[in-house]
Picture 1 (cartoon, rainbow, N blue to C red):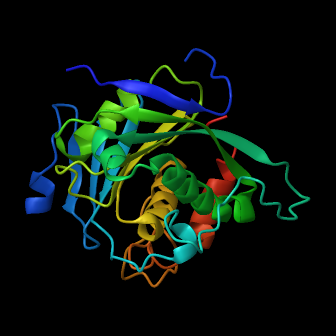
Picture 2 (cartoon, rainbow, N blue to C red):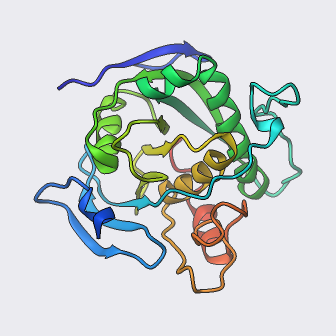
Length: 262
């Protein structure tokens, strides 16, 4: 079945244009590394649609956070985020990364203002990357995408394949598919793939902002900290929905990969 993938709004010219574990669909190349981890996630070694050897990390759903009024486009106190945040990081040059914001049919049906929601989620999540790494995500377009009810790992692979003609950057998918029984899923790359892919479940704007920061960390090569490690980090699932920064090891890793996806 061919996946529909359509650019709806563009801001720049594009060149070319347990029971939990049992839900995953994987082929003969996929290896479930450690089943369900103590933090509820699952790690799978596989090959992405471009032939890159990757790990896929599937997260459990996060806690339901109260919607911050300034994050909700339907709230009169909403504050629109932009990509113009300017932190004084004289030691580094700003790295601009193109982002392709993708919403499936269930997400678009739920929100008539879905492009505004995705803008808010992506730009707010990016504030931490601008602050700590001078990585600035720039949304190049909003894409409609038709997901199939094939579970988290299948939907991730489906989106990556549908977006394969896009230039380098980060493909960020957002879904309300009933088979997506996870908070988020992402490829964990060991080298720069050019185009990175993640998918987040709609958990409301505030929770999804935290989830997207975490999934982007996987794209930049970060694994999880053990939840009992005591490390306060967005890659420790104990803190994934309460902090917006990495521990020192992950901070160094992302910093060394900050020019990926250009």
